[in-house]
Length: 479
Image (cartoon, rainbow, N blue to C red; front, side, top):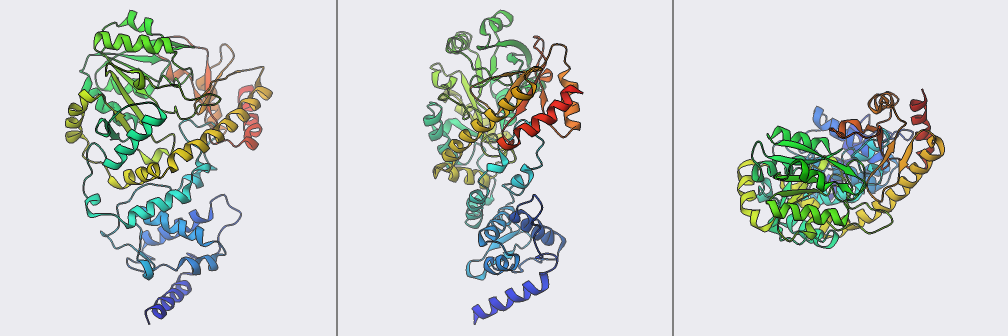
């Protein structure tokens, strides 16, 4: 009797909502089918066309009606469940969530893949959106959303979800040689969140801080906003020039570095300078922020050891992020503090960071523990190597007489120097008007002169499109 009622409700829903909600899919557009279905149902729920408690068509019947696979419908329903719009009821099917009873909403993979095609070529800071395992991620998300425990609906642990901290500690031990206990790992909302904690826990206003020049401008601004005095230390082919830092500010309280893949030049901090930097920090009691933002992606050789793995004096504050490996909208990263600083950092987190959402942390922990995270990195490393080589070849073939492509062993972008006298900021702006998104080097520079250059991300440029994209850039550079 119950089965008959469900079938009857399903047929009624199909008849009532067949146009335009469940009408034909756009098979000529760039938006994936699952995304079209997700967008339609989400809009219908928000506008009140679909009411709380109302049952959606079964995946089988909707797949048949739209001439697509059940997997596509499962993915769409999974994304909607991760947002809190719908709830799975087992044999009773999927229903629109009641107001106030929906699971906490998170931004998982609602639009990343559909946006991949519209990402402006060369845009920095984005992983390959077209290669993200969206269906797998949606399944992890939906599973955790359905099994959401009551304690996960409360305010999360201010230092981070326990299983995720364990997973991060295990991953770092294997991948980066960082020996740490889970209690030393603090989950953050990304690099800026970690930097905010560092400036409060380890620095005072007026303290001198070494920053790479050129270097990540958001780090520089973060220290300046906290009242520290930034000392611009030059970078060469061996990374941060430690002797120059000592000459400029020998008693600085902290050095912020990107040793694996210097941002933005792409060089690696040499072994000798790593030793010199650690020795300096130990001798004066300074801290070192190791921003290990994209060390997973190194081509042709194994990843270099982290500074933290060489630190015997407990002076390195190790910062990592999931933005470059998974997707930026996740807003999750981590900070590893020395054992002697755990209490200090924890105390501040309890006062300042009591807004940790548990659900996204649980999803990432599951992704790591099941081995999906490591496999995803391995796949992306091979993909990026291919895309990097294709873009570099296209640049040399088309623009080799006007620019120099610097070959680096790692990272997610190419560093390309221009002709003497070029205005990289103006050229980058002209490129944006043309639908491209290269980043100029100049904003990364403080005081040490560098040849004008552009930073070109290759992560979202498929090899088959490299020559076409470079031709568009050539028109900008030759106008």
